[in-house]
Image 1 (tube, helix red, strand yellow):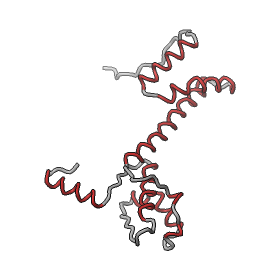
Image 2: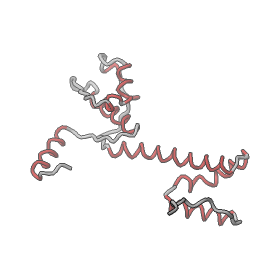
Image 3: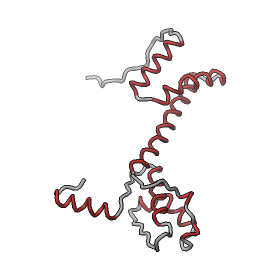
Image 4: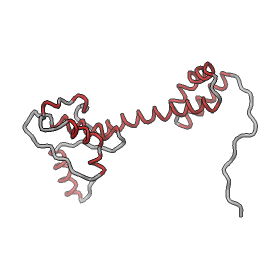
Length: 171
C-alpha cells in the first residue's frame, strides 16, 4: 500500500478578470477566516506591482500581514478575557510610589520569567501605593506575551470557592 501524498499545486491557472479575482479572494477569505487578507489583498497587490515583487514576495507580504493582525487581535482578546477592572500598563506606573522597588526588578517582573519558574508574587503595602496598578500592569504584560490571565478580587475568589464547594465542582 502506498502512503497517501498530499495534493500538489494546480497544474493550470485560468484567466479571470480583476473583478472576478477580487470576488473570489473575498469569498475564499471569508471561508478560510482570513479577514486581514480580505481587506489588504488589493492594496498590497498594488504596492507589490509598484515595487515589482514576485508572486511569492506578494504572498509573503499578505500572509505576514494576516499573521501580524492575528497576533495583535490575540493580545487584545487575552487582555479582555483577564477581566481587569480598569486598563493599566507598566509604562503608566509611577515608580516613585514604591521606592523599594528597583527599576531592574520591575523590568525582570515584566518579562514573566517568574511565572514560567512557578514563583509566587506577593504585593504588600499600604493603601494607595500602587499595588493594584502594578498587579494589573503585570497581568496585562503577561496577557500580551501570550499567557492566559484572570483577574479576580479576594472577595470574589472566596465566593467562587464557596459556591464550588457547595456544588462539589470547581469551574
